[in-house]
Length: 354
Image (cartoon, rainbow, N blue to C red; front, side, top):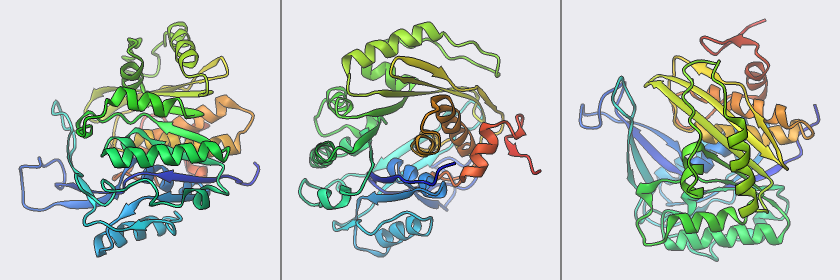
């Protein structure tokens, strides 16, 4: 395989995630465990684990907690040399995992965080992006506050001016849009500025207002309605012609810890499907879409002329994330390839040791 040549920049809010141990509810017990995370940071860590040079941009408070967040990424190989420090606090979220028939729960606490108060002009984007090949951002970056949304569009427009490919994850989070902006209109403006886009089927349905064909797989034998999906992607591309690669992830929750997973890639009129993974022992589903994007941004480098391998590799990265606690996918290229190539036990997703 060719050596990695990408220089990728990701931009978003780093968060501190709190959960109760085991399957305790947020209202139970007196102890929280904490981990750093956040969509764009998750993508950065995934890319670093796969050997890419990746720079993460955010704004953090100049406190021990903020500095520790940046250090946690640096220890995993992410370039945090351009992180901006200022503001009073780090954004947080509280996560209660699903169990049995009980759905997962997320409570955000991000108002007036260091990132919330980020404004255009604070980050020297031309200097940061001058040697980048890809700029990755998500809808969350524009959901926090009006000034953060303005800073996001500033970054996207400068990336466009410099001829850098823009990667976009819809990441629609209804509970974050509180400052008065129309989320669909804002995210569609972001979509119009991107070259490759990822979202799950529910997010695609929401942003396009087009009903999705059902994905109800309970095992690996489910047959996709590929013609219907193809027509849907054709409509999306007609509405947003700049975007040349559309990536859709699909998950069916058979139970709280038994999921099926697949993905589609539409690229220049060609529609491809990844295998369906049957994952009976989900450990932590947070960050699965981020793992997919981290896999894809690496896969387009190692498989530049093979879209099917790009898609299969990306979904394998996402499948592996389900087995790893926390927000970060810590799987390396060899481990992901082992899954993508079928060198593992399908029932448990454990890598086969040869």
